[in-house]
Image (cartoon, rainbow, N blue to C red; front, side, top):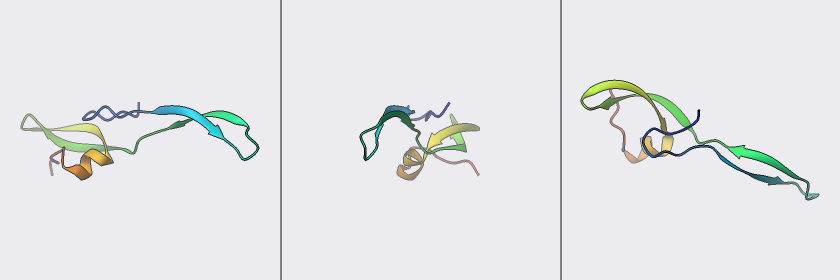
Length: 62
């Protein structure tokens, strides 16, 4: 499942509207990356969106 474990950002659904106004359902998925991060002082693999990575909400374990 595409969901960020830090901010909770997930898949959003909506309608794609073509030039001829044909409406079809579609989804937008967030950019989720598997990351080894420090959780309570120990390294753990979590799925995090790139916005949380870029803003510094996650401390990566190297």
